Every structure is written in structure tokens, then in C-alpha cells.
Length: 75
Length: 427
Image 1 (spheres, rainbow over the protein chains, first blue to last red):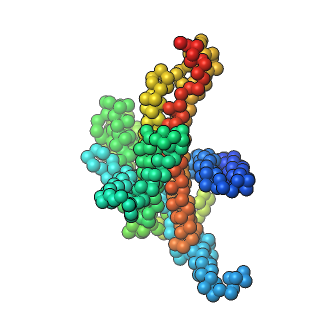
Image 2 (spheres, rainbow over the protein chains, first blue to last red; image 1 turned 60 degrees about the vertical axis):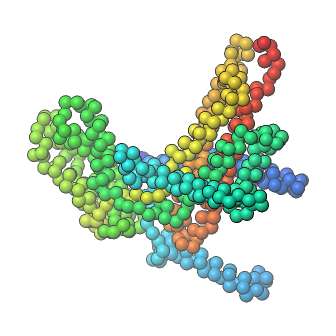
Image 3 (cartoon, rainbow over the protein chains, first blue to last red; image 1 turned 135 degrees about the vertical axis):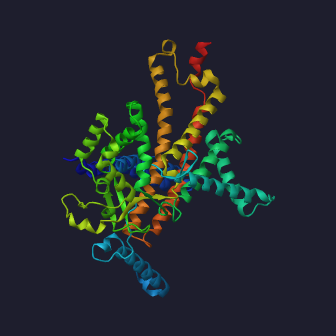
């Protein structure tokens, strides 16, 4: 295969596989946060705040994959 | 649904929203495939490094630097407005700044141990990082940032690139005279960048065509083939008079005029004749005057380095050189090889934290920029508005994460080792 033909494929695999882990992580995180909220609705503030912080960590990993995909495509 | 039908006001709003979305979809890239696409624009050139907008002496002024300064000015203005007329009962800007200060003061104390003033030493840097990152993220999505600029012609482009190649050739072949160096640099440039693509402009600043169709490879702007380059190289090696070489003269002429010279297929195996509409059009690269500072990796790396170096400083000041250094360099004889290995891992951890700081912010903001570009292409004018709201949210969340992580790493750095028993043995 030529390099130009492999490029989009490589970028697609990079972001596709790279987004799997963070997707699972975000799902688990939000699920656990909802569980915690259901048990203790008074703790909404701190739970929400920490959830968003942790979501951003998980999201950052997908963003790394996205950066790699972008670099593959455009550089 | 029944509620929607019973209230004429809600119904009108719903119809207006759906109509706006339909106009947006029809005007964008989807509509273009059905012959509509009246709002469509060409996809801008996506460049990962920041572009140079001006030279101040030999200093290259980048467009992201301009935006960073602009963000700094906004912060200065807010600080000036807040501190100009301080009152006991705050209002307006003073109220806003006091709110932010109070929020971070409480957060910092909470994370650093829970007692009042426990996190005093972290407060200044953490709040500064939050404010700076938030402002530069927000000014980066202002309209006009990244889409207004000037055209860098082929002449300017080759001029900048030739300089680097000339320095390279001069180093490799000190015996060459000026003409030979120039010619050899030109050969290197064409060999390496022959497939680089440029945007065809329709005389004015508006790019021609849509999407990929406006991208012209360099070897269709400057006509040359591989044999020509070999001829030039041979002439340089033989020491011939280079000014007599016709191909070199025609290359220089092509660079000066900078128009599309040859036909090419838009897609591999596509119709070559379709590109004849581009023949003779001016070519160049759009250099935006402004670019969001956090979409340049140098900005995020600089902020990450400031944060991580300050974390080390806090650690050394709180625990002393022996105490803080002892976290990384552990004596394998007295504490065992595993503790030494953990210390080395800890040292690597500091490095990877810097890198992940850098890429988290850069990746989020750069991806946001591309998301906006893609959405402006798919859902122009109307459909893009919610995504701008999303980017505002991402901007403040990323700033908060940057600040909180600096705080958490700082608190971890000033915490003493914990295993007091082994310390007691040392004494």
C-alpha cells in the first residue's frame, strides 16, 4: 500500500482504538458518580466537581489519540 | 407534544429552531452534494505549528504570541478595573475578582490540609494559571481568530525555506561559491517540499473552489522534473557557470510569478482536465494574523514547565535538599533496590506529568479548533453556535484542571515521605 493510502486508515485506527479506553472509563466514572448521588444526594456539589475533573483525565487520553491522528493526517 | 401544540409561542420557537438547522444543513457540506451549499466555505489549511506574522529584527513574531499578549492585556484590564476603586462592599469587577479569589482560596486550603491558610503558598500560582489559561482559551475562539490573515506567496515561502537549506549546504560544502550554494539549496528544497500543497486564490484573498480542490502541489507551480535536478547537481559538481543553466532561470521565474502552471488530478486517478480552471491562478498560503495561544504547543509547554518547576521549588523549600531529593535518589544499600527503583520511577513521573500537562491542554484546544472548523463546514452559520458554547465550557474546564493538577502535585511535593520508621533508623 502506498503511504498516502495508509494515512487515513492509520489515523482512523489511532482515534478509533484510542477512544475505546476513555469511553469505557468515562462510562464507569459517570455511572459510579450517579450511584453515589443516588445514595447521598446532599453530596451533589463535590461529587459533580470531582466527576468532571476525573472525566477530563479520561478524556485527555482520547485527546492524545486525537493528536496522534491529527499528526498522522496533516504532518 | 401536547404542551408544545397548546402554546403558540413555544411552537414558533421550535419551528424557528428547526428552520435554522435545516438552513444550516442545506447551506453546508451536506447540502453541497445536492447542489445547494450556499453558505459553504473552503476548509482552511490546518497547520500544527504556529505561523509567523512579522519579523521584529531577527525575532519571529508568531500569531499565537499576539493572542497571548492580547489575553494578558485583558487580564491586566480586569485587574485594573477591579482594583481601581476598592470598596468594603464589593460590586462589579471587584466582586468578580473577589469571588474567584475566595473560591481558589478555599479550594487550595481544602486540598492542602483543611486548615485555614494551609495552602497559602500555592494560591498565587494556581489562581494565575487558571485565569491565564481560561482567558487565552476564550480569546482563541473569538470570530476572526485563525480565519483572517494575509497570503504568503511562493516567493516569500521559498525565501524563508531556502535560508535554512543554504546554511546546511554551506556547512557540508564550504568550498562552494555563493551561486553554487544557492543552486544546491534550491535542489534540496524542491526534492523535499516538491509535494507540499498550496492554496489557489482567486486573485483576491478568497480561496478558490472548495475543500481539497484548492490545494496545488508545489511541483505544479514550479515546473521541474527529477532529471532537471540531477542536471543542476551535476553542473554544481563540475563547477560550470550556473547562470548559463536555463532550468535554474525558469525555476526562479516560476517562483517569482507563483501561479498554477500544470494540471493535476484532485484525487488519485481522477480527471486531470478538471484542474484546468486553476491554471494561471495565484497560489500561496493563508497566514492567519491571530491564532489561539493554547492551540500552539509552545504556549502549553511553557505553562507546564512553569508549573512543574515551581512544584519542584515548593518541594525543595518545604523538605530541604536532602528531604525532597531523597524522594528520587534512594540509597539501594540501606533501603533496598525496590525503593531505589520506585525513586527513579518518581523522577520519570515528574517528566511525564510535564508532557501530559502540555498535551492535555494543547490537544483539547487544538481539537476544539478543528471541531469548530469541521462544524463550520458541515453546519455553517447557525449549527456551529452550540459548539462554540461547548468550546467555552471546555476552555474553563481545562483551565480548572490545569490549576487543580498543579495544586495537587504541589501538595504531593511538600508532603514528607511518610515512612518515619526508616528515617529513625538512619539517625
